[in-house]
Length: 209
Image (cartoon, rainbow, N blue to C red; front, side, top):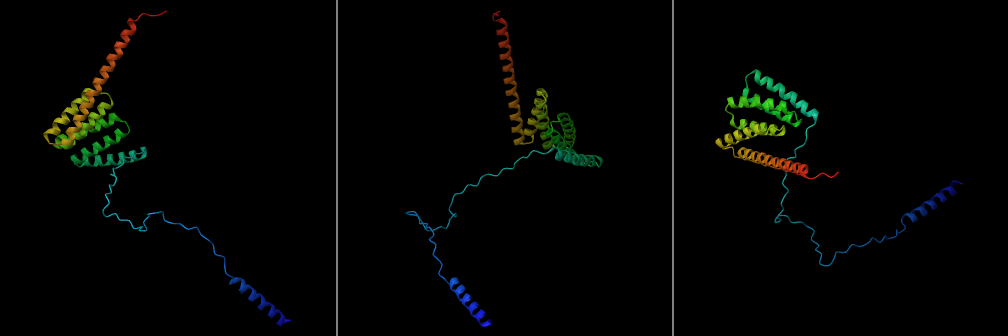
């Protein structure tokens, strides 16, 4: 009985081996041929290529209210420290930073107050560059709240101070703001005149009952 079982196992083993070594069918894969006149050289040469990279500019991202509050607290502490130890020039810049933070929140009254404090110190320290920058910011605030005449005074002072110290970019900025101020004022005056003329014509026209 044992011999019969052994012979049967040998026969099954030979049958399985024959199935394993049986030749597998060949699968026909599709051929991909090159188009006529196509090059077989797939190397890329960029040494002589005239590639113009896009100009990368810094993106200005809006700050969150939480970030502004944290920055305000930190700058306030620093300003108090600098004023306490009479580091006035640094404190002047701290006040300007606070004003810019308030401008982001449209808190123009507070921004205006801190800019005036900063400007007072920068004048005493003869920091003309910072004074011009503060005057431009003050003018921007006054334009935003409708104080056109006062804004023009700050812009003219900023322009004259910038020209005297050869701050070309600041002088150009002041010139542009003065031009925009005068243009908007003229446009607004013309619009008011047209409105007044239209009202006058409407009053003179015969009414239909």
